[in-house]
Figure 1 (tube, rainbow, N blue to C red):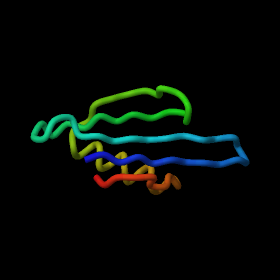
Figure 2 (cartoon, rainbow, N blue to C red):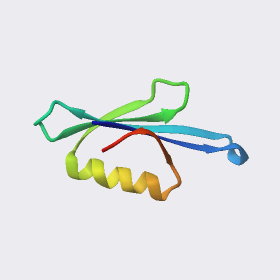
Figure 3 (cartoon, rainbow, N blue to C red):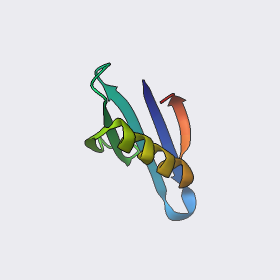
Figure 4 (cartoon, rainbow, N blue to C red):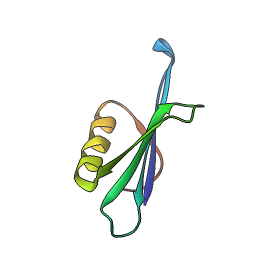
Length: 70
């Protein structure tokens, strides 16, 4: 499973993305990728619990889901 979130604010010239993608089917690990849209961004691997926590945090901050489910 994978999900992509984006945040756009022209007022402060902010255009960011946040992606989560499972690493293997049963590993319980998730690759998080984030940064400014149009860049390669940064990456970090989280366990499932931390990844869900980050997803909720981004949605609270105003990120909108572009595609996927997680």
